[in-house]
Image 1 (cartoon, helix red, strand yellow):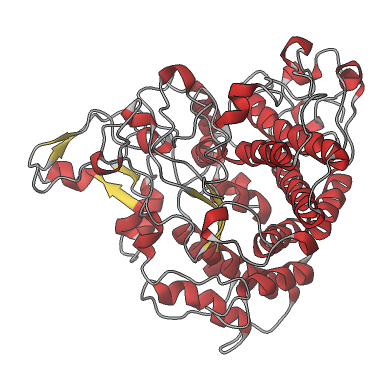
Image 2 (image 1 turned 60 degrees about the horizontal axis):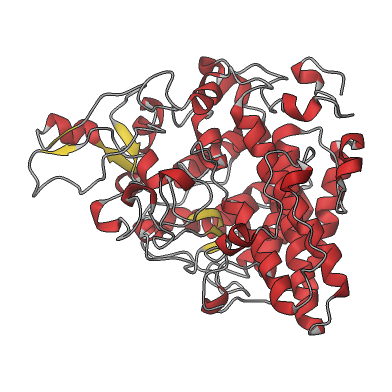
Length: 508
């Protein structure tokens, strides 16, 4: 593709060819544009496929993303922002006051089921399109794999969800019921495995952002890891990671310099497996946040009221909103790690040295997220400048799959001693930043994942998966056997057959 796969998704919004609804299961018929005269050509099928991809990087009009919500809920960050009432949905995730009326569950539910709806529409409509057979097979494979990715997020976040594999008409939407989580996982596995044969091994630069076989193997490995299917998980990650570090069939290699991962121009690099794409050319403004393609994280994580005092020594940060400040516990852990500087924007030290000033806003620790911090040098030339940052976000990258394979091997009972596959791949992550090898234990794996993947949206899910969330997040108000999931949004329960989860006072 000459244009990035996600960058052209705005065309669909403009032409109103795909449903744009607040709730997947309660679509306002007046907002539902009929597709009877569309999906006639291969190009139209491709445009429909782009719309499915677009939901992966969806940002709400309230600046919510999956990453900032679950980072706020973790022990690595606070919600931050200007005050305890600013950006309330992140605050509710941070202090575990979220409920079925909160914005976070509604956004995450809508994001996932809108993606599923779009995938189902494409899978139905493409059947009747006269087009190249191999191209059709690839589009079908991509739609199925994307549907699986949306379902994987939804079942982890909500647990009790409906399984929708066809285009639901408005008259039937209120009759949809939930299924057992095991049925969701079974369908996820089916969609991912069925998609593999029609996907390419590698993706050329012109098609950057689309799924290949390696990305699907990585997602499937992660699904198996969540299901505690250790052997199958290790096998999937082995296919991604290759016979040795740097020898992946799919061309994946760790970048030599960890900091290069966060160079906003270094998109779709050799370490990237599944990446969310944003750009600086969408002209996003305050009236259309959420509908364009600039990355709002650049403005969110920056220090509020940032002022360089000694310009020659001060980083060129854009004054931001102080979202996701890093906890003192995490800072103390990473402070003397080689990944500290590319990860943490240490405003505490800069201020004490008289180099900058900034507002000590809500939950201020003095430590902000360097990985995404917007800079004057990275702002767009058009649009509302602070909303048009072009940095991409990693959904899965190679260091992540190295660490997950080591974990799967350890849990499966495979050899993990010096010279073993688990030892080699686990310590390749450490060697990249100049750290000496250590033995493969769960404590070491957990620590390495925490330091390597700061602010990448993994920590909360890891804690839940390891059963450590109740103890690690108790200081924020996390309640065991409740906060491992989010409540079904109340709007989805009204006048439907959906039931609230037992963890949240329901009967499902």
